[in-house]
Amino acid sequence: MSYLDLVSLEKLEMAPAGFKPTVIVKVGTSSIMRERQDNPQAWNDPATAAGEGLNSSQGELALSTLALIVDTLIALKRAGFWVVLVTSGAVGVGCRRLGIKTRPSRIAEKQALAAVGMGRLMHHYEELFAIANESTALVLVSRSDFGKKSKFINIQNTLHELFKLGVIPIINENDTVTSNDFKFGDNDRLSALVAGMVFARYLFLLTDVDRLYTADPRNNPSAKPIETVVDLEELDLNVNSSGKGGTQWGTGGMETKLAAAKLATAGGSKVVIIHGRKPERILDFVLERENKIGTVFLGSRTPVSSARKLWILHGLVPSGGIEIDAGAVRAVINKKSLFAVGVRKITGTFFQDGAIRIFNKDGSEIGRAITNYDSSDLVKILGSKSNKIEEILGERAGPEEVVHRDNLVLF
Ligand SMILES: Nc1ncnc2c1ncn2[C@@H]1O[C@H](COP(=O)(O)OP(=O)(O)O)[C@@H](O)[C@H]1O
Ligand SMILES: N[C@@H](CCC(=O)OP(=O)(O)O)C(=O)O
Image (tube, rainbow, N blue to C red):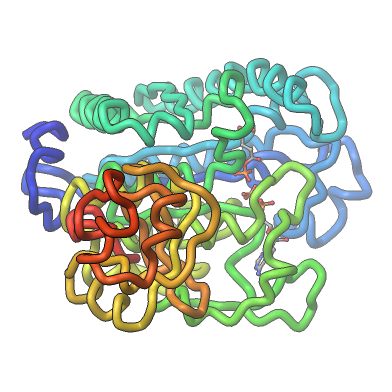
């Protein structure tokens, strides 16, 4: 069965028979770059030796970490998993190659440096995997590739083919050609989309802290570690200090990791944040030899069950959103369509058939949808009964539901 067949299936409980459990490992720039070894002061620092709190300015590749990651991926593959490596680091490695000491801020410069660095980074991975006779394939993707259904399916099929060939896909954002408004910028969300695409059982986010804390542990010594997250909505975090990355090379910080966890767990994957210096623990975790590891976000007990909904959740880029009232929240939880009468507010602008965010009255995003009305029409009919739509919009009146239940996915 190919992914194309899957997408045409209305019901999709989980990766079907014949599909191996899949593990995605995402490696942040902060994990694969380190302080230069010829800086003895940093190297003698106990925190550095423990692999914590590295200041990766003047960074170079952390070769031992890279080798450990490769080793772990090979062990996972040989244990019967399909594996995908999502790697950051193109810009960082490009800087290193050209002797540039700080991460550039100009877009064109970053794109040029990514072009320099990606080939170099891939060369290192390729060489390391080749030692164990394993083949790799470079897959560079852009945000827009996930938004168009045909492209989404193409990437799925390519990955599936690579798995069947026994090749390990190595994925990064195509930084060199992607324009800024269509960029992920970090690879956390990208890895979550890939997890949804291949029905991954696990997504590991490797970074330069051992787990998620209640606040950034670099600036908050009293921050408490978080071991398991059952419900992301109930996380009590100091968001202001959780956003920005702790190193000059990383981009997303914890905010993008939480966004990734939200997406991937909704698709049924278990997400784990762990320290990049200890990738071998991944194997112990998936083989259930160890369960205390970093921060574990449990996969949803009711993962998105149709391929179409997976695509709405993972593929489309929402613009704007709507706030719905409590009755409408109950209705959509009960798998009903959404009507104008339950829409309270509109944020931003969106087009008919575009993807939107759905918020409850607390402002929490509860799902994604494809709307039958654009924002300028919806603002006129919100709160109205369906039989009034024609009266208000005249010829512009569309279907009685604002969002059909097949086009609505809750997190
Ligand atoms: N609540 C938090 N818990 C743990 N780390 C946090 C938190 N908030 C912010 N951070 C910072 O996030 C950084 C990791 O993000 P980033 O540098 O983007 O890593 P990567 O390159 O691995 O994606 C850590 O170094 C840490 O300082
Ligand atoms: N695609 C970019 C990723 C940028 C980045 O730093 O991401 P991350 O380290 O995952 O926060 C690169 O390869 O440099």
